[in-house]
Length: 276
Image (cartoon, rainbow, N blue to C red):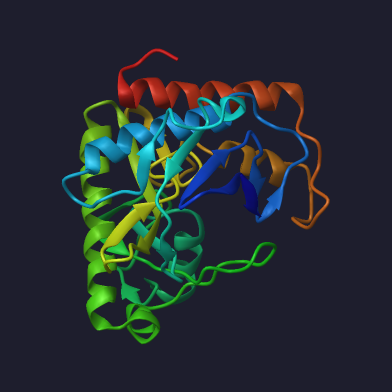
């Protein structure tokens, strides 16, 4: 195997015509990798993604070839997958107003050029889910909101429409399944790529605590921050330290590590119905 790329969380290896995608226990916030890993995080992301790929298979094809035909040292946190030519756009669906979407709304009354009703507050449910793409920035730089017209200019009208359709369909399916399990999916980010035959294929991870915001449905209340089962817990801790969001990032205390691991595992168990 040959290491092709080491990202903030994942390492990608070439193995013949296939790729081996390995999820580490690293955690990144504000585009910086924290020096302290979260035990079992890579395995949670891998298993949850595999479960979601199954739930979504009738909506969009995925890149998974095998979850077991991987090197022994990566077992449980790696997948063998197809090579894709990745779309140069981050495909994001939002059903609730929070995070950078909220900040963008407060500035302009819109997100990615999509106008929203006035008077919305943090964690408000949107009238309907919206497609809010961003740039795909290099490591260390920040993604920026772009409009649907920008996506059309980047990939063409036909592909742009498919990206929007797939992204919203995946979000709606995921949100419906999660709601039955007491979880609100506020938003999610998808990675899509072209297979050799031109088909758009779902890649990377999907509907995980790293790529989505998961809230406890029984305590959801607009106008304030929500109890989250995702990376937002670590973001909030990092912000509370006074860190300037530039490398080097601070060490994460043991209690924050443990609480983060518990939240990732709890949302995995709630969503899948499987014991960790």
